[in-house]
Image (tube, rainbow, N blue to C red; front, top):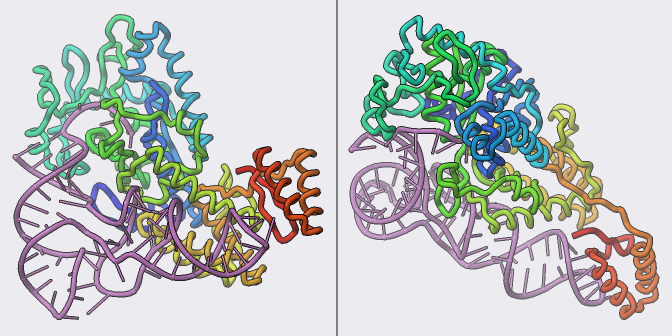
Length: 463
RNA sequence: GGCGGCGUGGCCGAGUGGUUAGGCAGGGGCCUGCAAAGCCCCGUACUCCGGUUCGAAUCCGGACGCCGCCUCCA
């Protein structure tokens, strides 16, 4: 049984699936108005890991993650740069998928775009107006949050106390500062779609309700996103589903933030580092390992130091892959646990990892177990238990693969000159000509190789 | 003002009553012609003050500090 923290209940509870054996999950995706930042990297990694783990455990996952392609910030950028909104969207959506590919985030089964669902949104908003849970003002249509009995469920606060602390500037046409825009009337030069209540565009909170229900159906299993979406975004989605009397997400999952020097990384603070930059200068797997080594609900510091730390830890794992020549796993397709033969040596490891992962995705402890197993595999090999060591190492590779982390043995493409130097060095060593062997090693190092003496002689690899 | 979270060894980061988290960095050793990789050992941490307990980083109370949400944000 998989257990997961549910924000709506504020507790870890059994993942209670709509259909046994199948998980339907919706992950709130990005607004494509800029390069993705580290926070986007974290949420995609966290939920990719969850998804992969569910699959590994034999569940059939339907994973939906949207692209918000109509938004004030997109319009603002297009204006600033004197180009078309569609052009802005095209550029940054392309950057988004590039970054996802480099992070090793598996493609969603469906990636709906808000603009493909305008008609459905208009219909929903019209129904709200009809039923009087929404109202028109001079600038658009607003949802009346007071019509939803348990508004504030996800925020963990009743409506009254949310209202008391509201920082939003009061628009006197709004009945409550917490009421949110369902529809924004188009100003001149703004993109617009027709609607019975006036030409314009949808507010941000409506698209996810419509798209998740369309693609996953009523009462889907899991709705996820960054903690900052908990309120008001997810609260408002929920409110709309409630108002439409449609069963919505059975569970809510939220991941912690990326911090910068102890402060939340956020768009508004403009203290973000682009994911694109990070991925250009580091091994993308390092970020995944960094994410795995802390709990998904905890904040993490992503800095040059913590990434470098993760890269060094990764080197240890790659060394294992090299030593045992492990296959590369964790691509777009990955193994299911039942497809792997858990040898005697690794069964206990597997069971411990399963217990940890199934308890609210305890990746930090699972990773600690795996690192312990790395030592065990190396020790077994050092002691000459080659087969046993190999079986354990293979299992480690499979389990990291299940978490989306590919262990890389590295390429063995060696140029002819280097190959000749290796042969010369082995000859020199055979003659116990250490001076010459060391000279040849220096030469190889100068050519950019890491030189190691293996059981079969000189082994060179890229650092 | 309301709600929530956090404070752990040089760094990152788990842990929720008693036993080694793990990684990185550092020191010592084994192995090696010398290295590298690997293995072993080591630092004996838990903001502070009280309390409960045979025993607390872990529970309770208080203090201090930090962060977040109640606009936009993953």
